[in-house]
Image 1 (spheres, rainbow, N blue to C red):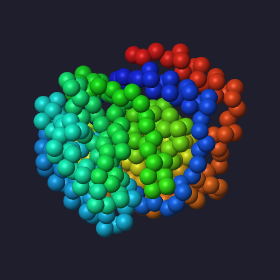
Image 2 (spheres, one colour):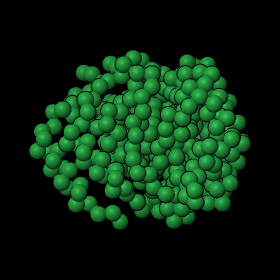
Image 3 (cartoon, rainbow, N blue to C red):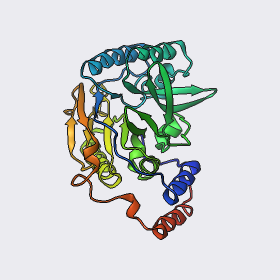
Image 4 (spheres, rainbow, N blue to C red):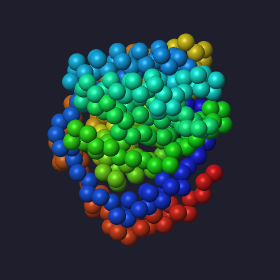
Length: 309
C-alpha cells in the first residue's frame, strides 16, 4: 500500500445505487464452513518462489479440512516497485498460472490468491478465485491508492462480483477498498455473507501502529454493520528498512470478534469454523430489510452527487 488518494469507479457507484433500491434477499450460510487465511513473506518479483509457497500452504489448509483459503494482495507477483511487480506479473492464460489452476481439480477447496494480472498493455491488481480446476472468476481492486495508480500504474476494477461455493455467497475486496464502505456494501447487497480482504501492507515504521488500529477497526465496522464474516490476509515484511509489514491477519465474526488471528510479524495459517448461527439473534440485531425505501433512495441520490477526484 502506498499513498491514500483514491480512484473511484462510476460503474461501482451505479451498481451500489441499483442494489440499494432493489437488493436481493440476504440469506445466511447454508452450512458450516472452514476458512483459512495465510500471512507471511512475499518475494517481490519472484513468481516461482511465491507459487511454491502457495502450493505448500494449500496442502496445509487441505489437511485442516478448509473449504476456503485466502492469500495476500498480489502475492504471486509481489508489490514493492513497478519493476518488481512487472517481473512477477502474469496473464491468466500463462502456462504457470493455468497449471496451478488445473491442480485444484484434485480437491474442493476454494483458493483466493493475488496476482498482478496482465491484460494487453494494462495491469490489474487482481485476486484469482479458483476451485475444482477452474477459475471461478476474478476481482480487480477498485479503490486504488496514489501509489497503486501513479507508481505501479494499476488500472482500477469496475465491478464487485459475488461468488458461490460450499453453500456460501462470498466476495473479495482488496486492501484500500476496506477504507471505504462502498465495495463491501455492494457485495453485501448482492448477497455476500463472507468478505475476504487480502492486503499488502508495508508501512512507514512511524505509522505502523496507527495504520494497524485503523485497518482493524475498519474491519470491525464492515463485519458488524454489514453483518458479514470478514477474513483478512496480509503479508509480513521484515527485510525492508523503515517499512515493515506487520501481518495482523484474522477471521472475524459478524459481531466483530476475532475467531482466529495471527500474531504480528509471524508467518502463520489461521483457521476457523463459521456457521449459519452467526447470522441470527443474538449474534446480529438488525436486518437490511428494515431500512425504509425513502432512506435507500435518499442515500442513492446523495451518492450520485459524488464526483470522482
